[in-house]
Length: 352
Image (tube, rainbow, N blue to C red; front, side, top):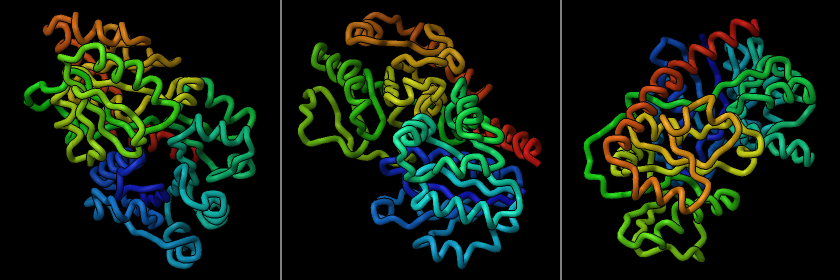
């Protein structure tokens, strides 16, 4: 295939979960012989924190704005077998209108933020997609599955709403020998709706168990947060250091944004990456979780400080290790980037 992807960012993972998803997908597409052109809007906050300025797979080009995009890349978009526009692309509505007129191949919208997108549409907030565009795309690829796919088709007129969940790269995420210096860690950008879960399942356990060791990595946390003394705070952790961070943890925490909890069927990319490293995951609950992991066997669910602490203090070491091994086996069977490319090829054939 000859693909063009217009995405939020592939060069910088600062403050977004899009970059690691695009990297895994583009790397696998390239490995399978597909030609990929990734177009990214040059933004100052990403320019200041580019942890992969020159991706070694496919071809990545930065552009300054909509006029340059239209003038320079219309031929590439017109010639592509598949053109994908992702969520949160700057000036997304205008970019989408241009793409739909210009592309001659299959046209897809890749929604990495489906529950947030739907909440925005209900508020008539058309930051990066508008209702009149949805039915014009040949494919609506969604990070979220379950009932939301029917809603996209029934209410918003999507022609083919199909799940294309996040994935991981097995050559990047795998178990690695480290001292287990962190009892419970968390990796994620700050958000208001995730913070209560982080307080309940990690920060309060850290205060309750002073002898334990905890860590939170990610940007944009307010200076007003009173972190416990036994908690290591890391402002930004580039993807190259994610594996070693996970592999130093006895358990890792997954916290889901409120819109994702309400919608369900929306696994985080961090969930798959941590599981791929063989690290046992403690997660909040959301509808559809059982579609991806078997709770109690491949993943632990906690709703309270007491439940979170009980796993840390009471689980036998052998069971802890088996939990991580089973989770790793599950994601290797179902959630690698190679699985996503296979699904994408199936959807493309269907759309054609």
